[in-house]
Amino acid sequence: MIRVVHVITKLELGGAQENTLYTLGHLDPSRFSGLLLTHPEGLLVADAVADARYETRFVPPLVREVRPHRDVAALAQLTNVLRREMRAARRSGGAARVIVHTHSSKAGILGRAAARLAGVPVVIHSIHGYGFHPRQHPAVRGLYVGLERLAARWTTHFIAVAQADIEEGVSLGLFPRERATLIRSGIEIARFDGRGLDREAMVGELGFDPARPLVGMVACFKPQKNPVDFVRVAGIVAQAAPEAQFLLAGDGVLRPAVEAEARRLGLGDRFRLLGWRRDVPRIIPCLDVLVLTSLWEGLPRVFPQAMAAGRPIVAYRVDGGPEAVAEGVNGFLVDPGDVPGAATRIIDLLKDPERARRMGAAGAERVAEFDADLMVRRQEELYERLVGTATGPG
Image (tube, rainbow, N blue to C red):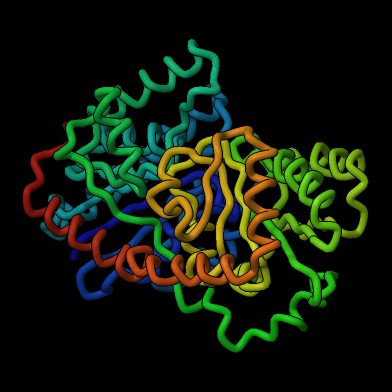
């Protein structure tokens, strides 16, 4: 039996968090035993606690923000838990069969440091996009890159959701190519295909007119996702396509800015904020166009979700996006910040529904590589391979 300990910060609604819970819940129980270490707050905490297929333990100081005192406490708590795991494994003769698998920047650095201190033989880090990006102050970015280089010394292997992240990691000297594996961020494809969904009723339930086109974005309201640009895109589209309606599903620190921009542009009832939603598989098939205005990403799961639903995509061209959205095939990508360009592409699709339908169908044909169960099987194969060759990280 291989013991796999996943470490992640707050369990908010997000791709990294949902994938982590799906992985833990679908590992083969005859070969793997799972443990989740996370912060005790977040919309997905109840899901984690309720799932009897793995254990969940809370590390209260493990927060996303940089908080030196809490970070030291989190490191100490993580190290203590992992040392106990290693002692238990030694008693059963399986000390070489313990894996720590970290996610996100903060949990990735503290979790890998704790694994090192506890003597865990196999340490994996999943890259769901990097914590550093070109829009940061050079000194801040340099600090984060330096921390990632340090943590890379304690890492046996890396998983990336996008080839673009592997290329960046190699170019920055974080890891050699042979220590990274591409495993796509998986979704339950059949849940998004819209079959059996009464679209007219669902659109009405959301507060929109089912006879009019609906454009939407699903994202956390944080700087990375840049939701204010979606409002600005909607403002331009509304001028050219007065029948269009718009929704934003999500919430976060930028909600006041989103609301203020919508008021400034006079979008009124045509624009609705849905808040956090657990029924995204019912929302995306209701859209005529899926939009994403992120300024940096790994490879957002909302892309394969839209592909599974047969919906065309208009988004900013960042990081792994072109690996899911083929230009002119299942969507369009424009430069980050090109609000008029994104609006033009949306207007084109709304004016040509048949083209939009063809592009959506093309996306559905390309979505198989994002299957959630394929993601789990590939991780299981990697776990077994690394345990079989373990000599310790670095």
